[in-house]
Length: 294
Picture 1 (spheres, one colour):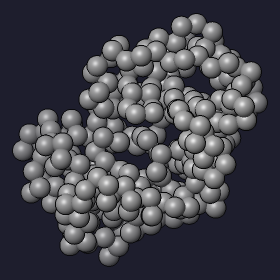
Picture 2 (cartoon, rainbow, N blue to C red; picture 1 turned 135 degrees about the horizontal axis):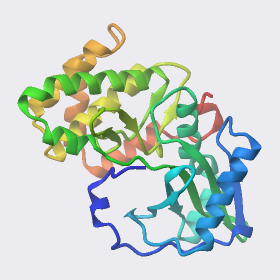
Picture 3 (cartoon, rainbow, N blue to C red; picture 1 turned 180 degrees about the vertical axis):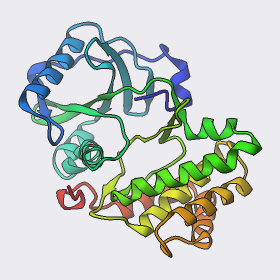
Picture 4 (tube, rainbow, N blue to C red; picture 1 turned 90 degrees about the vertical axis):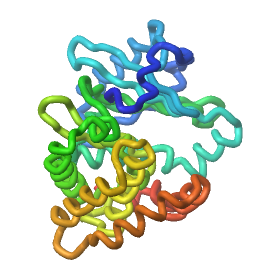
């Protein structure tokens, strides 16, 4: 994981994690991970738990991210998802179980297809009295990276056209692997300094289709554009330039600027509650295995 949110700048001010009991954990290996490789990941996680985990470098609501440094694998992020109420734990364990695991499975499937996202090492589910209380996801930490919001905000007028062309090509490549991010924004796209490599993070609302999904892609791109304006990274006119590059990069006749602008305006005008309801409707079944085509 990288410095992918402005809240990360508040390093060290958040409360430390409550270490779980390793006897209460059930482990998940990413697809394609061999027994020896995953045994090393499990050992690394247990070593982290055996010492003081330190403070979260990022925390929003029931999600936190911690960093550890490993001599073999380099910096590693541990993402913690908490279910703090009895009702939340019951839903996570029963009717929403697949949705709880979807973030891990979607990211693993996307990476296995060649998608650019932090490498997954594994995950651990913490149970207490038969209910899921927390999920821990281990992945690589990307140093020297920043969000698209910050990157675009720093671009000069003479740099924007070339940068937007690169972003558009990356969006299309990711979508052609079947990714519909579902809650895409300019905060979930990382760009590394220097090489300008791009990376997708946060698959909590993602779906993986067998092939390119034009409607899902249009909604993802429109939401990215809207977030750039909300974050005051650029103007609506600049977003239209981004949309024009996306239309040119996308498979022929699958995306139009008119539809992108319509969806963009809808995102900007809808309340957070309206967007949440619509997002939940669109992803009602996303956590079930048949919605992750691996």
